[in-house]
Amino acid sequence: MKRIGRYEILGEIGRGGMGVVYKARDTALGRIVAIKTIRLSELTEPAELQRLQERLVREARSAALLSHPGIVTVYDIAEED
Image 1 (spheres, one colour):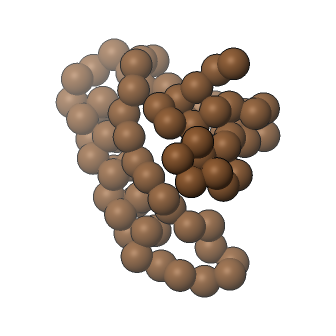
Image 2 (tube, one colour):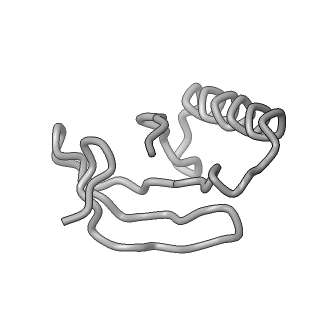
Image 3 (cartoon, one colour):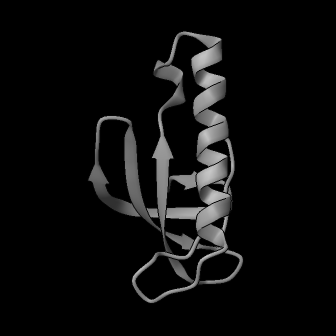
């Protein structure tokens, strides 16, 4: 059984040029979530990697402030191997 942090991966929802979206279960709260992963390992320039990481955190924080039925809710952001 594959895990990402506290999330148990149930299957793949979709795949794109920069990452994969998984259906998962939050083992702490028991809810089903979608996890968007980004493959940062493919970036070779440290400055490019830093800019992308900062942009992703900024976007997640901005989305976390929003509450609307048409917008997904951000519950967590993390970096793993």
